[in-house]
Length: 311
Ligand code: SF4
Ligand code: SF4
Image 1 (cartoon, rainbow, N blue to C red):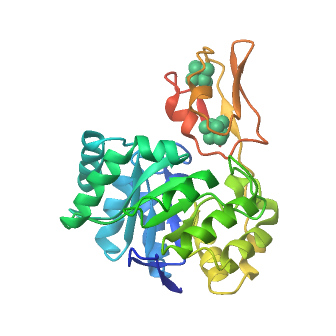
Image 2 (cartoon, rainbow, N blue to C red):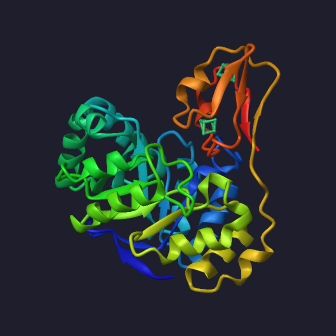
């Protein structure tokens, strides 16, 4: 597995990053033991980078895995906007994964220059934690090309985690080309790039070969985060990143979908949470436009009645 340096952060990561959202309670809801088994298998196959979030609930899976896979570079992220929220999220991460150092901490789902400015206190705090030796690098995750463009104005941002895929699915403010242009400009400023959702959150599964070729061969992407739920998927993706795409054909990829249970009360909290505008309350019940949904599961977390599931 090839490793690359994430821009000026200096972090050395494998080109394939293990995205842990798929094993989380928001999606497959694996036990920490089952999740750790997959993470350890990927590590044994050369994967050295994993991504999580305060929201995902996968710190226990990672903590277990790190006992046998100590050299994983761990990236996490949180909805933080000032010093107290950032300090609390960092503390949860340290305790959650059982380390006193987080390789990469990112502001989760940022949108624009205005969002970054509004959250600058958190960025400054994180930068100070980096200088004190508690964080390896500070970054930002986003579905917006405007945010990628704006990030270059904040010298503490050394890594970006943008949504990009062959079809541009899920990019909130433009096309794949818009995002590529923004990423190119950020890379020119020394920012490391690790991509999310190379399969468009599941929409490109039927053409995963072309979608993966795009992500792996893109000169813009230092690393690519992929959610993997089985040993076979890990082996096929590791082989693809090593140049052998032959195992992808044999994968029995299930198309994903969102289910809303009958006990939905139509409160609309899920719709407020969905950045993709994929869920609406119609006639008193949450209804999902599966063509817009990227199956992130964030609406499930927002539902007070626990009636949404990604299956
Ligand atoms: S948050 Fe839950 S209860 Fe409220 S509308 Fe959405 S699915 Fe229904
Ligand atoms: S409907 Fe839910 S799972 Fe789909 S994109 Fe919106 S928040 Fe994510």
